[in-house]
Length: 400
Image 1: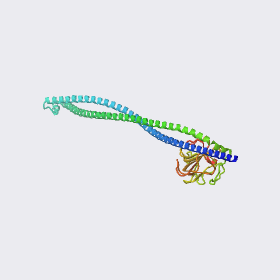
Image 2 (image 1 turned 90 degrees about the vertical axis):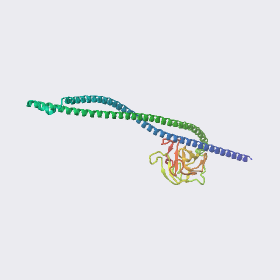
Image 3 (image 1 turned 60 degrees about the horizontal axis):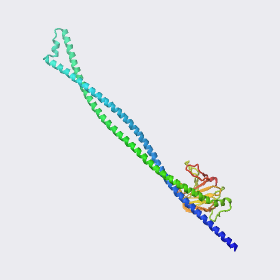
Image 4 (image 1 turned 180 degrees about the vertical axis):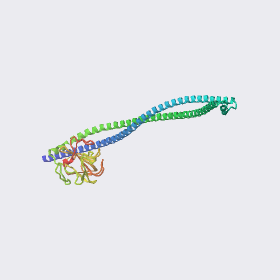
């Protein structure tokens, strides 16, 4: 009778323990899914913020161009003001010259008219009469010289009159041209001023809109980060609950059963290869020099992925950050392994204790992946991850 009671108690304890593990696993999985969705939203918001940042960067370049144009416009306006002042001075000087030229023209015209009147009043006397009118040869020479001087003066006076008339006409044309230039420069100045004002308004509008959008995105990110912190805290609590399973592995009191489907892929380290085939296509650094932080095995979609060592499954599902469908296993030695880009088929769930070589999922091409492969990471405490390295990821080849 006592034996039956003892057996019944053991069965009850076993059932309760199983239910606790199942409940913990379900809670862990739900929290993982919740955090994954939050992280996806954060990634999406940050991606939008990056886009806004690029727009701000591009707008700043445009603003710099506008600022340069504004500076150039100001310089042009100063030049226009200088030219305008010079033209106004030139117009004033031209008017003065025109008045002086007209005055001289009138005086010369009066002198010519006076000579003509004087000759008319003298009668029919000709230049020959004047020359031959003298009594002696000397008088004739003198008379010839006088006549010659008068003729030269007449010709010189006529040339001056013609020159002055041309100067007057040129002055008039220059004055009209100057007026046209002044009007054109005024129009140009008004257009430049308008363009400057439009550029300033465009600049202010772009900056205002982009800053407002960036502000809203940052508020959304802050809200999501706060929510994510809460879930992270809950996850830490859930992981603390799994310490019982991890403690069993550490103490050696519980050795997971390898099962008939477990595969021994060999190796001299504490871990074994996570896939039975496929070559390593990328190591801790890409060929470009960019940090990778993992090993990539080039395998077709649907290839079986095996646990690299004994451990407790912390997550089995979709993960943000580019890993896609992923399994995370905590090992007794404090190491943690990540298996990314699965096709969505999982053979384990959160909370389960798995053995080395046990199938955990099928490989795929999900998440941030450029082609079918398995992404295999090894991390040490505190298991952090950042872009560009400087995190908790270590080279898996040191453990294989």
